[in-house]
Length: 355
Image (cartoon, rainbow, N blue to C red; front, side):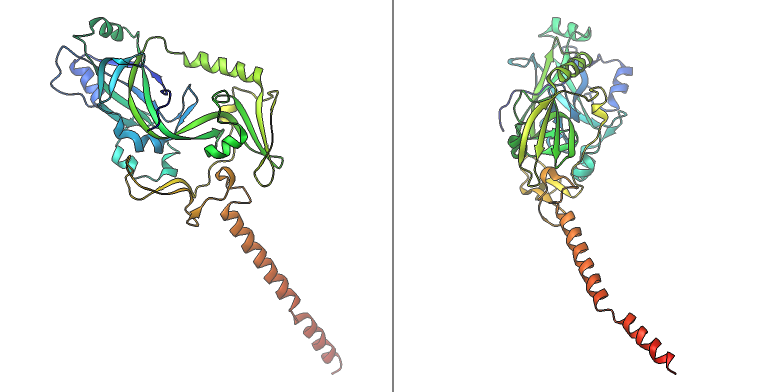
């Protein structure tokens, strides 16, 4: 597992003090032990959500499902200091956008393309060692601290708007550097805009390593405003491609896009027949063998489209349709050329006219 700078996500902490009402409320999603002792403080909170976080890391639902079993029994630290352990995670659960609990086994049975269209959150139940850290426990109760997820990852792709590029494709465009993450970009091919939006990193093969208590988390709203201002100052990265998908130019132009509305804009998405990975078995675990990468499930071969774009002429589906269309048109033309019905009808009319 590659050791990268931890990706963090802040969330409110919900304290579970042990009253019957709180236990019933929390038990709807997170299971807390019945034999709680007074020397520990139980809490629950949002650990990670699908989509992009404020570090411009994008979490695909399928990747969260695959890595779900790496969350529990990991340490809780202070400000991501690995030698200051103040508790641990003991439980986790998926919920949907309205807070309904979803079973991991059911999610694992869903194909990746369907999963990645869902909105998922992972909630955790945790323990703080209250008898050893009484002041910290009181501050947690007072809402001073928030949660910050920690994870490692083995690989990543790059996302621009709704278009996901392989790391190799993004590297050719200069879109893999940390300075580019979070900036606005447009990808244009033969005058057609394929994608427009923020540059984010889609993390692959996650292994969650723990959770931190952070005291001064960045305010999400203020960060969004700061980013919007930065976009206006820095402009938009424009990548132009030729018909062979080679980079013609990469430049920065003044932004004329409403940075408030850009998150609502859509661009070319991933083909429904595309799979980043094809695994040997289901459900997928950390050691599951990968049979194929960047795979076209329709034609059972490697994807040939740039950015897995269903409108790309190099898409196998489009190639097949164009081949079939060309073949059908040639057959029709040949049939028209060999059609003697008109000539024979004229000859028949001439014969009849002489009778």
